[in-house]
Length: 395
Ligand SMILES: Cc1ncc(COP(=O)(O)O)c(C=O)c1O
Image (cartoon, rainbow, N blue to C red; front, side, top):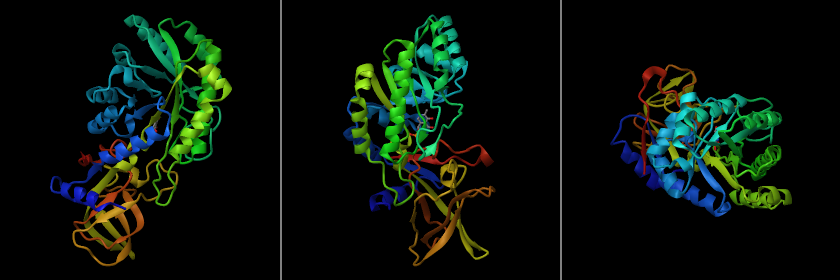
């Protein structure tokens, strides 16, 4: 539930805007960062995946805490630079980097270009050669099988992401004729939103074993191993959060394995996290415009929905579930009722929460959707209906 202090902060913002808005709590991001740093080895580098939320204030905050940044487009590259990240703190992932994006990243000399296909490797060589530059890259390795069975599966037996494990020999062969490219590390990101430390550990184990395989093929020591991450947050009330302490302990044990110590003892390990870092910090706040009844069901029509917060409307979920909702009422009504919260658009899936028990709503009440600090604003189809995007506030 929402603290009285947070309720006051959110209510105060309604004086500044009439439309729907996001509120990001910087103190929550700080608590999350501290929790990570206390539970994980101090030399494990943490990258922030800007795709989760590239608000300038959030990027600046995470940079100040000590994060590096994972970007996936030239737009995110520019946002990261404006927030003060140096080239050495930037890693570029994504299966469809354009020639001009690659050129910009190479000219800037970013820390790591993550190669996601054999053709991309060749293109990087040709751009680097024409610029007369040497480029360090990591190969993103795509697992041949599902790594675990829980969490949201991003990659299965075939995928547009990364280079299949069985194509690594081909990648190494191409690399031999790429004098301007040095494969310096590996990258993996197989799953998202994992709430079990065992699942995270299985992904880490895959990442390390894949790095060992690539290192053997290359015949030189790798310098960086990106383990991915996929740390989840409990979107559904009552779910246990990820046990970070257990994640840290399992990782320490993995790193102590004889082969890992021997072969990757000097490598720098890194993870990249989006939703874990910022998801719980964010609230989407919309106002009730109307209430109505249809065939015995109660509806509240809100001034924001799908176009400003597609995530709450079920996007990306296999089984649609309601996000946690808090209500700030203009005048407190007694009684509760099951209500459908509908956004303002003409799209039938514009349902912010379905059949949820809430205090009886009236026009002017505020509906606050929890846990949308990641993929809330950044993952919403603002072009639809040309509705105004939500305003963003952080404090
Ligand atoms: C390559 C890569 N890294 C990191 C992330 C961040 O994932 P999450 O926000 O679940 O931590 C994603 C998400 O899609 C991704 O594709």
